[in-house]
Amino acid sequence: MPSLNGSTSVNGSSKFLDHTSALETLKEYQSRDGLGIEDLIDTKQRGGLTYNDFLILPGYIGFPASEVVLDSPITKRITLKTPFVSSPMDTVTEHEMAIHMALQGGLGVIHHNCSPDAQAEMVRKVKRYENGFIVDPVVISKETTVEEAKALKEKWGFGGFPVTESGKLGTKLLGIVTNRDLQFEDDLSQTVDKVMVTDLVTAQLGVTLPEANKILAKSRKGKLPIVDKDFNLVSMISRSDLTKNLHFPLASKLPDSKQLICAAAIGTRPEDKLRLKKLVDAGLDIVVLDSSQGNSMYQIDMVKWIKQEYPGLDVIGGNVVTREQAANLIAAGVDGLRIGMGSGSACITQEVMAVGRPQAAAVYSVSSFAAKFGVPCIADGGVQNVGHIVKGLALGASTVMMGGLLAGTTESPGTSFVSREGKLVKAYRGMGSIDAMQDKKAGAGGKNSQASNAGTARYFSEGDSVLVAQGVSGAVAHRGSISKFVPYLAAGLKHSLQDCGMRSLKEMHESAANGSLRFEIRTASAQLEGGVNMESYEKKLYA
Image (cartoon, rainbow, N blue to C red; front, side):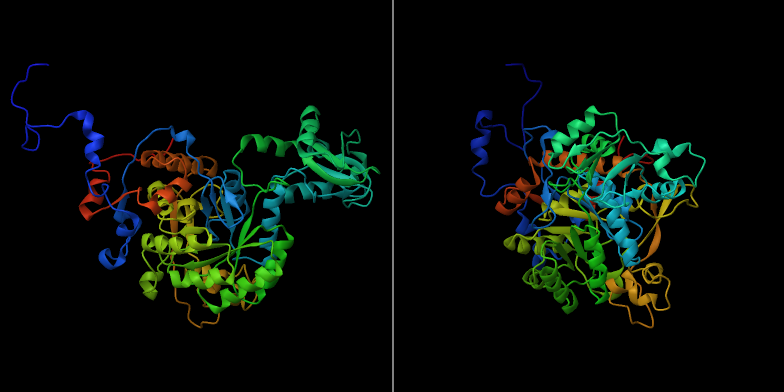
C-alpha cells in the first residue's frame, strides 16, 4: 500500500466499500440512471420537446462501430440498409439525388412540382440507372442515324445501344452501337449499321444473374445481350452496372432485378391519379402522399384508391403529428407514415398557422402508436446534424427524412452561387414558400398552373386568390457530394449507437420500449455547455 500525502475523503466520507462489490451495489438503486422514454416525452409534465431538449445517456461499448447494423424498414415490405431519406422538395430531390441516395443505401423521394411526364421521366432514369437484367433497354434500328444515336446518348447519359431488325425488344439482334463507334464518326447522316459492332458475346435466355455476370466479367465487352433461341433480344446486362454493384454494396435494390428502389411524391387531387399511372408505368416502387396535414378526406380516399388499383405499390401517408391523425391513415391502409408539421428549417407553418407539434413529441407519439400495427415511420423535419438523426430514431422512427441538410449537396437540383460573404451556397426553399407555390413547371406553364402546383396542393391553397406562405426561400452551405456526406452521416450514426451500447436500430427501439435506453432533459445552460465555447474555431464535419 503506497503512503498517503494526507487524509483521503470522498464526498465527506472516509469509509468505503470494497471496489469488487460495485456491480452488486448498483442493484440497490430502485431505478436506472436517467429517464425512460415515457417519462422523457411526458407532454403533460414537460410540454412538447424538440431534439435539442434532451440527450441519450451512454451505455456499454462491447463491440466496434463497424459492427453496428443500420438496416431499417421504410414501409411494411421494403427495408433500407441506411435509414436516410431525401425530401420531395424541388430544391432537394430529382433523379440525381434519388440515384445517389439509393446507391448509398437510402432513398430519394422525387418531388412533384413538375409535369407528370417530367416526373415519370425522372423515375425512369432512376430505374434504368443500375440494373442486373435490363428488361427495357433503349433499342434502335439499323436505319437509325449516327446523329440520332448521339442524341439518345445525350438524353439518357449512357451509350451502347443494341440494334435490332425493327428497333424494338423481342426482334432479331443485329449488333451494338458503342460510345467508341460514335465518338469519332463525322458523318452524322450515316446509319448505325455501318458503324455498329457485330462481333457479339451473348447469353441465352434462362441464364441466372450470377452466371451472366461471370460471362460479362470474362468478356471484353461493355454489354451482354440476353437472347432467345432465335437470337431475338430479350434483355441486357451492362459492365458499368457490374462495377456499380461492387462499389455500392449497400445500394437500395429490388432483389430480383437489382434495380434501384425509387419513390416519388404526388398530391391528393383527382389529376394526381393520372400522374400516378405514369409513375407506375415508369417503374415506381413507393408513392408518398405529400401533404402538410395528412388527416384529410382527400388523402384517406386516395390511400384506399391506390391500394385497390395498385396493390403491389407501397403507400406512405402523412404528414401527421398525433395518434389520432395516424389512426385514420393506418385504417385506410398506408404502408408507412411521415411525421412532422412545421419543424423543417424552411417551414413557418407553426408560426403562421399556429398548428403543428414539436418534433420529438410528435415522433414518439405517432411511432409508438404505429408500431402496434407494424407501420414504419419517417421522422421528417428538424434534422440539423447527426445527433438529431440519432434522437429521431431513438424516439421510434425507422428512418429520417432530410431537406435542408441535403439541399447543399452536389446532387440536389438547387442553383449554386457565391453568397455576399464569399461562401459557396445552394438555393433552397420550402414547398410552402411563395416562390415554390408560384412555380409554373407543374402546370407546364399554363394559365392555371397554380391548380397543378405541388406547393399549393401540399398546403391546400390551389384555389386561393391570395397565397399564404408557410415556407421561406433562401440558401444553405454547399456540402459536397452525397457520396461523401451520406457515409459521414452513417458513420456518425454508427458511432452514436456504439456509445449507447446498441448493435442495431432494432435493438435501440427494443431498448427504448423496455426502458433500458435512458435519456436526460437538457436545460438551456446544458445546451450551452454542450456546444462549442471558444473565442474562434473552424468546424470541419468530416475528412
